[in-house]
Length: 301
Image 1 (cartoon, rainbow, N blue to C red):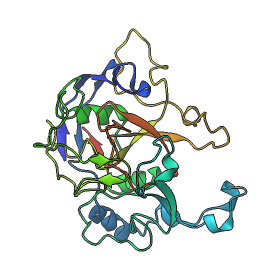
Image 2 (cartoon, one colour):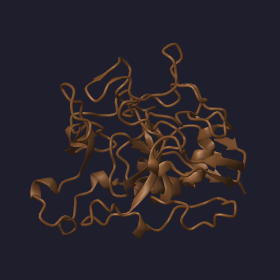
Image 3 (cartoon, rainbow, N blue to C red):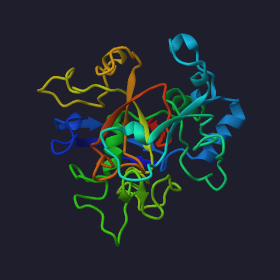
Image 4 (tube, one colour):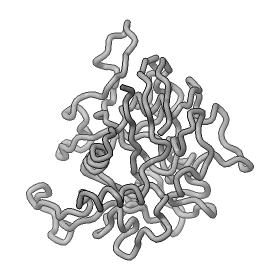
């Protein structure tokens, strides 16, 4: 683990996506942060020790999905599947498919396995899977503020984990989409990479940009500062309430959402410029995907 000193920093961004604004100075305490996301090897050790079954490996309860065809009520997860050519980027259903049998053991579905991927980040983990691992390890998941402070590596207000300038072809910085999204990735991209494949940030933390999105403890709130006084410096701020995190665009789906951070190997500059510390997205707690993982923290004593 790596020690990240506490202090104040500017959280969020006023220059990119609306959910990141407004910028606000906050204070966080120092904490120990795992240098990398949890790998397949580490998660396998947890499963071997506990017999744990992830959400993606459990049968679905028909009562939770009224009207769903029986064929869909089987264990599985959402898998990225590249398209054969250019598509309308407004419709993500063209490259995400529900894959029965997909799980952390089978990242692309039943025909895939973890051979050669022991040091890749574990994926297809729902929030409770990540929390269960953290509890077993005697650790915790970070809050959004803790994660963003750590990701910045001491570069307060910088656009990227490495500074304000985009990466250059001669110095690659992170595993995000290089090529034409979502159908043609450059060699070496378009999938997860072994943890630590790219230079760490100023605190020595690897993959705080790209590779996989990472779960945080915080419930998602579109107006995250709504409960905080405008006059006072928020100290170790936390997210809102579960009931406020529901997706208002889907009133019939009342599944709470947590904040995920960091972007993934699927973040393309033309589609999802979110491999930045300020970037944040909501994600339903019961859903794992092939580009979501997690890392753990240990608060200072």
